[in-house]
Amino acid sequence: AQKVTQAQTEISVVEKEDVTLDCVYETRDTTYYLFWYKQPPSGELVFLIRRNSFDEQNEISGRYSWNFQKSTSSFNFTITASQVVDSAVYFCALNPGTYKYIFGTGTRLKVLA
Amino acid sequence: DGGITQSPKYLFRKEGQNVTLSCEQNLNHDAMYWYRQDPGQGLRLIYYSQIVNDFQKGDIAEGYSVSREKKESFPLTVTSAQKNPTAFYLCASSLFREQDQPQHFGDGTRLSIL
Image 1 (cartoon, each protein chain N blue to C red):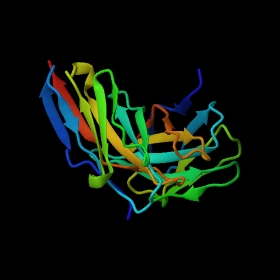
Image 2 (cartoon, rainbow over the protein chains, first blue to last red):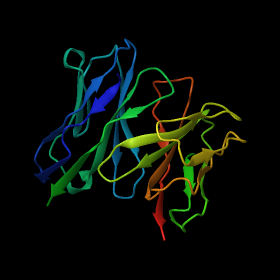
Image 3 (cartoon, rainbow over the protein chains, first blue to last red):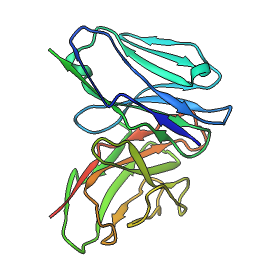
């Protein structure tokens, strides 16, 4: 079965705190792709990062960093020094090399001033 | 600027009425998708299309219909058979032959029942 689990439904942090959003995936495919999207209150999903199954290098982009571990089937997302503008729903998604993108249920992040 | 345009932003449906949601893209993407989003849930795939004049059912196709007469356009009709249509609908597109490419999304249409 192919599945993406985001166990954290909602997280609240105070501005400047670090926060990690968890993503656990299931697939039997050896080639697959993982994505993170941000959905601000306006509604559209904004692409943040892509990672393929052969590249386990972690990535940092400004305050954002991603930790991909095949051994635990996880692709976690950390925001350092969170800001109010980071408040959104964040989705993790899996593409097992087909037409279909499988989304998790999302984590709502609230950053309080 | 290239992107995906969904219209209208808000739509109201009367009992027994069919309504059509528009989705247009100028990204020259092959594949287009329709998702439904309910509060607290992820995105559920309604229909997708890989090429013109071809489309496939997703996980929750009942009560919906689509057409793909042009590469740029993928309208979704919510029929009267869909008994619980109130939701946020998102259209997306991607380069089908490149599965490592992300999907691009429109701003969504919020559909409610009158």
